[in-house]
Image 1 (tube, rainbow, N blue to C red):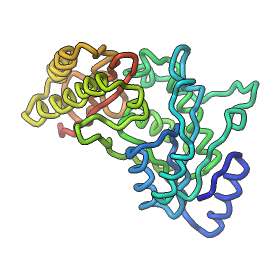
Image 2 (cartoon, helix red, strand yellow):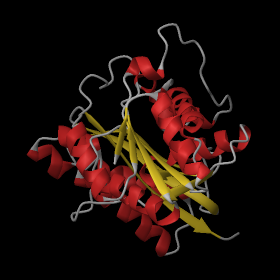
Image 3 (cartoon, rainbow, N blue to C red):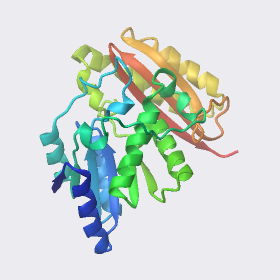
Length: 284
C-alpha cells in the first residue's frame, strides 16, 4: 500500500492508474478506523480497481470547544487495517498540506439543509465537511466515493454538493455497522467509560423502537419521535441534542412517514456526543 503525504504524490499515482484505464474509489476518513470504515473500504474494493483512503483529521469541521485536539489518532493501526482490506493508497497529509496559512475559500450549501439536525448546534461543521471533501475530490479525482450511512446528514449534503457542483462522481452510501450489542461503531466510542458505554446502548435501543413502530404501521412521525425521546430520557447519563424525523433528501422536518424519511438522533452520554439513525422508504 502506498503511503502518500503530499497532494502531488496522490495526483501522480492516480494519473498512472488512470493511464492504465483503472477505476479509482475514494474513502474519506478522519482516521482511528474501525469495522465501519473497513466496510466502506471493502465496498470500494468490490466496485473499483484501486482504492484511496484519506486519513486526515479536518480542522475546519470542528467548532470552538469541540474535540479537535482530543480526537483519537493511531495512524499505524489505521494503515494495518487499510492494507488488510485491500486499500491501494492512504493519503495522510499535514494540515499545512491541505490548507494554506491564508486560505480563505470554502464550499458551502446555502439552503436550510445544513442548518437541520447536527447543523443546529454545529453551525460551521458542514461547511468544513464540504470544503475538505471537495478538496479530496479535486486531489484524487475518483470515479466513486464511499460514505457511511451513520453520518446520514453528511451523506445527503455530499450528494447535493456533487449534484450542484457537477462533480460527476458516484456517491455510494454504505449501511451502519454495529457492535454485537447494537451500538453504532464510532471512533468517539473510545471516549466512553465502562458505565457510559453501557448507557450508550439507549441510542440503538431507541432506534430499534422507532423501527418497530414503523414496521407495525405507525405513520405519524411525531409519535415515533416522542416515543424514542421518552425512551432515551429513561437513561440518567443521556442528554438529548435532538431526535428528529426529516425528509431523507432535503433534511427538512416531516410529520408523516411517507417517501424517504430519515429518523435521526444526537445524544450526549456524559461529555461524548453520539449519533444514530434509521431510514424508512415508504410509498405514497
